[in-house]
Image 1: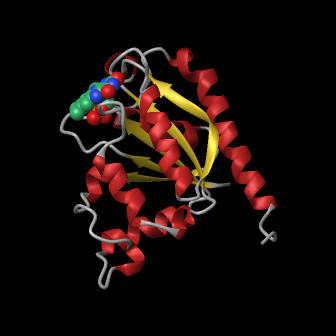
Image 2 (image 1 turned 90 degrees about the vertical axis):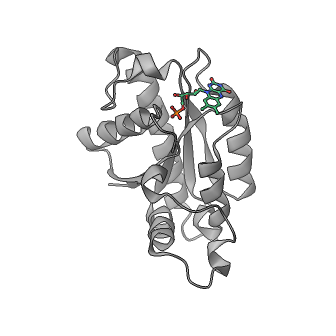
Length: 188
Ligand SMILES: Cc1cc2nc3c(=O)[nH]c(=O)nc-3n(C[C@H](O)[C@H](O)[C@H](O)COP(=O)(O)O)c2cc1C
């Protein structure tokens, strides 16, 4: 069974996108598809980036913990809000912090907004940054419009059927990339 890390990127007071992170956690665990590590950036509360982990003289235990969980994950789902067409500083903060941990890591993106377009603009810039740092970007992307209406605080969709098919497709593409990578493990 793969180990999936979910990075919940919003640290905003009253955030809503965390609902979608909880939804993926439940979906994966209840369907026994993977183990899940929830990497909630609101709990880590990392200080602003000063240098990459590789160059930090005495990284905090939280930084080491976060890096270890990214490294050991078979695949990652990033749940990000869209802020002014881009992704939040909290997320850039941890993308820049790590280096090798991202390399060839299957990463699937879920964008969340309270408008009608489901964070479609943030996906472009976020995909580019992660591609630059050599992550394996999963082509399928997940968009959640009107999050305040479509998910409750516990991560339950108000209309379960509305997301069933897209979730299955999104997760299966992530798992395809994890499987493809595992078959290449002896290839240098
Ligand atoms: C600074 C800021 C900028 C935002 N810009 C956008 C935007 O460009 N497009 C959009 O659809 N929603 C935008 N929103 C609304 C978010 O989509 C909304 O807050 C949503 O709940 C996801 O963010 P959250 O997890 O922080 O709640 C913005 C919200 C904030 C706080």
